[in-house]
Length: 372
Ligand code: PLP
Image (cartoon, rainbow, N blue to C red; front, side, top):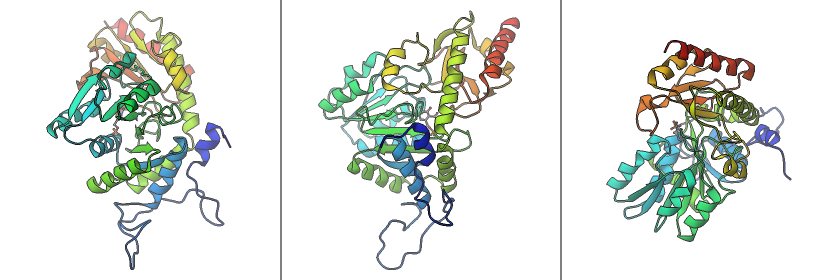
């Protein structure tokens, strides 16, 4: 039976009701489990499996539209698990030139292990041009922080025709915004630090796949490197999933309101939000996404202007990361590593009232312009 996203999110991964048992059992803190006799699962040693992960992994699997899920200590742990468990010396890996910069940093590591890494932009499905002989194709759509979008189904078809695996970093969308596995990807990967858990208070990541063999190889990688989630983080994330649909809907509505208000501001250039009807990605995003996310990016005249703007914001904290219920913004260029202008701002829109947030942003722009 098809159910709505709210019903799905609220019930995801909850065990069947049992008299006197809580609806969501609390976190299980255990390094090891009682284990007389033959050392067989489900729970033997705390690095291999934990009942709190089991429930969270079942929940995310449901949100992904049916998948085996392996959770990790962070998004990067999940990304590295897919890349490093699937690629060996001599393999070709295709990556976006504009994906999250720490993912891109895997290029040097892969090359040091004897793999070849080819890079092409997300926009215009440019990765199609460098797929020849690839073993793994990495996509990130929408890309962070420039918000370009590529056609997952189109690239997955071409990659599969050449025998490659396809992984999508789905952090910006979450599975309620876009389901890469339904679009043909072999792996849907995310930093659940962001919108999935949504409160800016924990780090977590996951890998989802419908291929049991791939799931097993990723699970074995987790056991081998020990990049496991803490039970408390796993439980908090599971608890937070119950409001995922509410948060995403509110954040996307606020993000659209903000982007719309920024459109006519003379100080703002390069405004991007896939939900804006005239965004270059909107047509494709509308075909493969069900929600457009909470990140709006734009460029202010220069670094000093952007810093004044950020300092004048009342309802958005100056912080990196995105996806939290609390709005935040940063000048992305302060980190280096991304091809952005010094005045480029990545704005993560929270669940505050648009009636407070949008005027506050416009006022901060006025103040930044005044002190020029
Ligand atoms: N993927 C994307 C798109 C990100 O923006 C980030 C972090 O900002 C990550 C992955 C890494 O996630 P984590 O910080 O949980 O390791």
